[in-house]
Length: 284
Image 1 (cartoon, rainbow, N blue to C red):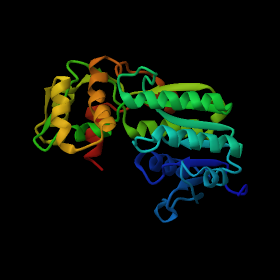
Image 2: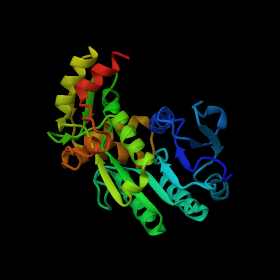
Image 3: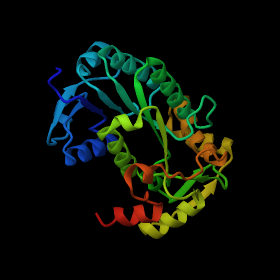
C-alpha cells in the first residue's frame, strides 16, 4: 500500500472532490482516490482508486497506509455524519497520516445558527485533538446552489430577511484546496474562510438569477414558523428540516456575511461573484 501516492483525496465521485481530483491531475500531482466504488472513480492521469468508507475503521486505516496528506471532504449530510467524521479521523491518525485538509463551513462554531456548522466545528476540534497537522477550508454557501433555492414556481422562500451572504463558487474552493494540497507545509495550522467577492441578499440574488438564467426568480421572506410549515410536506427527518431552515436564519443573523481575501490569497485570482458565475455557467 505504501507504494501508492502519499496524497489521498476523498469525494472524487462528487462535485467538490471531483473538481479537486481533476485539477490535481492537470497539475501533475499523483493521488490516491478514496472511493466506496472503484468503478465510479474518475479516470485521471496519476490517480489510483482505493476502496474506503468513513465508518469502516479497519478498511480506512488500510486505505490510508502511507498517506502523508489527506483531503477530507465532509461526509454527505446525515444524522450520523459527525460519528462518520470521528471514525475516519481516528483511522487517519492510526494510519500515520501527517496532515488533514478538511472542508469545513464558514463561521463554524459550537453555537452556529446553521445547525450543520456545529458539526463542522466539532470535527475541527477532533482533528486538532488528534495531533495531526491540519488546514481547514471554511466554505461559505456555494454559488452553485443558488439557482436550486428557487422552487418550481421560481420563488426562493426562507426566513433570511434582509441578511446577506458572501457565497462562493465551488470551483474557487477547489482551486484553493489544490494550492494547499500541492504544498501543504505552507498551510499548517491555517484556517481559510473561503467566500465570494461580495455580500448579497437573497432578494438581490433573485434579481441576478433572473437576469442570468432567463427564469423569473423572486424572494419571499418567511417567518420561521412558515418555513417549517412549508417544508413539512417533504417528510424529512427533523434534523434535516432544522438544517434547511437554519441556512436562512443564519443569513438573517449575519453569520454568513463578510467577504474575505482568502481565495485570492491562495489562488492569485479574484473569486467569482454570482453574475459572473452564471455567465460562465451558460457559456460552457
